[in-house]
Amino acid sequence: MSKFLYLTGRNVKLFFKDKGMFFASMITPIILLVLYATFLSKVFEESFAAGFPQEFGVPDKLIDGFVGGELLSALLAVCCVTVAFSSNMVMIQDKVKGTIHDILIAPVGKSVVALSYYVATLISTLLICYSALIIGMIYLGAVGWYMSAGDVFMIMLDVLLLSLFGTALSSIINFFLSSQGQMSAVGTIVSAGYGFICGAYMPIAQYGKGLQNVLSLLPGTYGTSLLRNHSLNGIFRELDEMNVPSEVIESVKDSLDCNIYFFDGKVSIGAMFAVLLLSTVILAAVYVALNVEWKKHNKKNKINKTQVEG
Image (cartoon, rainbow, N blue to C red; front, side, top):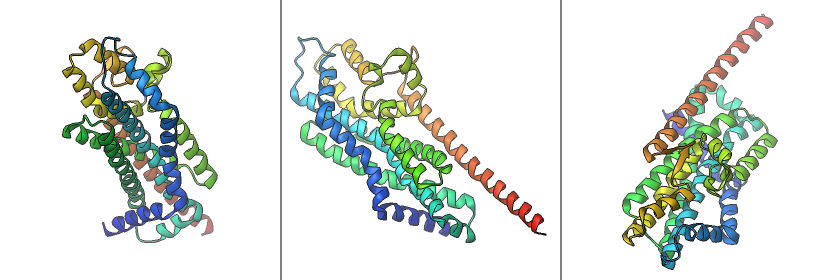
């Protein structure tokens, strides 16, 4: 246990100490804030207002609270995965620099090393994402706060689950990387593309039906929807108290991906949690299996090498 804790602490410290990796992890949030400042906020306002008949006068504070909640959900949905890829780069850096060989010379199992990378990645990701959540909460408090304590708790749970998913996914992909170029390429692709395929930048309800069906197969879509539901729950409660018809509210939810459809079937909140949890467990199991197989393969190569030399 002491070896595991030491390696985990070492990996976390290395991530925050390496300015290059830390800056890479912040690229996506910065890009999202720039997009928001330029045109996303306007898109969010228009998509929200378009769902209401003209006779409904929606207060400006409610619109601002909606836009803030939409931004918060988008920011967290992307960060939980992209930051995980960046913080997991410590594992690749150790391969590139040959540090991993020095670590494995010590009397510590490969499984302990692999687990230390996973937990360190999760800790680093959560520290950044929860910091982003705090900043987002402060912003919502300034423009329009409609959340309950339960909503805040559920958002924190969403961030934890999505970070677990992002860590498991990045661990599998980064397991196969062994160079600085590969690391940069994967980081760039994930940072640029993930926000679109998970529905963070633009609701997948605005895509074509075929693409919607494809994206409904991806676990990240449900993680984004969970964050969106819990970030906007207070807004929908307020609309209900304003006697806005439930049909109108459901239509708005459809347009914002609060309601996700697996082909033609509506997915419940419980099912979204189940998909995210099951996907995380499967990915984590694959990561463990890869490390076990690597250990067996490495051991077999050593035996063959010894036989040849003998």
